[in-house]
Length: 203
Image (cartoon, rainbow, N blue to C red):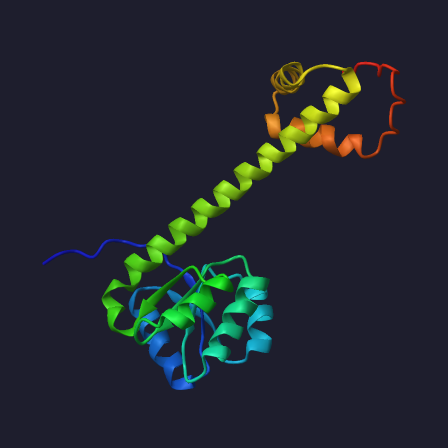
């Protein structure tokens, strides 16, 4: 007999216009060893609940009305920092296309209960990868802005500006992005240097 692998216990929000479906999904989620932290029917409430409870993942069922399900997805994606997964009875290209526009990460069909865990694993991994990439782009953007500040203030080229950032980070034992952020934030408070006037070097 195979021993089931240990999985991280997730905090799950479930949403559906049908209360009977909420009960079925809740049982399936609990059977996987996860915790249902909220059950929502009203699209007007789901966003606030998701923001307050901060679930790891939200499962949104497609009931009688696709518009209702889409509104639930929209509320969750707008107000919560978690992936939304659509639960559908059978593949529905029209609904899934609209759901993807509203930010749904994946879908799971009713007949795949035994595969829900692997699907959730994939969704959470992709969600984490996306945010890692988003943070990486954010760090790069801050560094580029800081280089621009130093190039203007010290009349140096891009390579020299980067070396200034890197040297400061090393000497202060700080991350490069932290030094870049400090440069950009302090720049916003400084008066502009008249053209042709050389700025005094910073420490």
